[in-house]
Amino acid sequence: MTRIGLISDTHNLLRSEAAAWLEGCAHILHAGDICRPEVLEELGRIAPVSAVRGNNDQGAWAQGLPVQCTVDLAGVRVHLLHDLAELAIDTAREGVRVVLSGHSHRPLVQERNGVLFVNPGSAGPRRFTLPISLGELWIEDRQVRAGLYTLSV
Image (cartoon, rainbow, N blue to C red; front, side, top):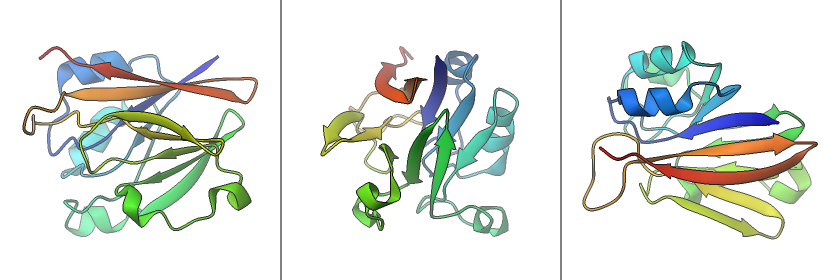
């Protein structure tokens, strides 16, 4: 079984609790609003990272990040983007099983027409009364399930 870590909206802050929870992941997916490249470097010390650019990711370092991308992990195609409203692919035609987004800071796992939509919420500074959270994908024999985790900080 393969565990994939999901994180978004860190906004300059990789909490030690979030990094500890991501330990042991085979891969980490970051759905944007990273805000400084050191966050990706820190995550890269835990596991390989795929990331997309969010609306708050500015500067030369961020220009190297795609706005959307699709990755194949343990036989499952995962499409990453920051704002779900900007989804620009036909998931069925592209064979995408999971769509990972951020932006809203609201954790969500929802299956629609055979596609798992996941927003891990925000792992960065607290916004409003929303939880500080991350997510994970568990993949086995090309089957995938998602979970959310709220940090108690």
